[in-house]
Length: 57
Ligand code: FES
Image (cartoon, rainbow, N blue to C red; front, side, top):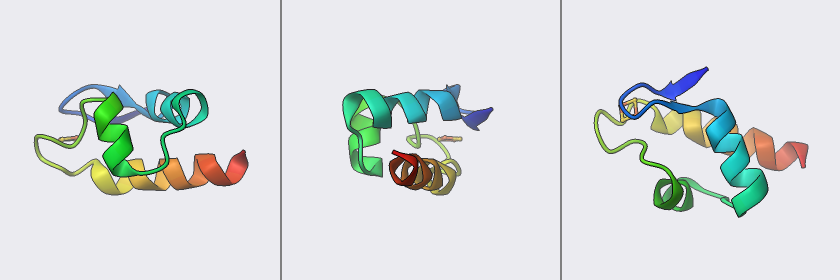
């Protein structure tokens, strides 16, 4: 599923960044992936995916 349409970032990309690179918040995610720099609509969903991935660990 695409989370960020502008940059083609998927929920899987975000989960991988959390699980493999230790990303814990949006700021860290944006250092890894281009997301949220265009329309910003994806930020809220990206945050939810980070949160739920951390809880699942
Ligand atoms: Fe992510 Fe537009 S959907 S910046």
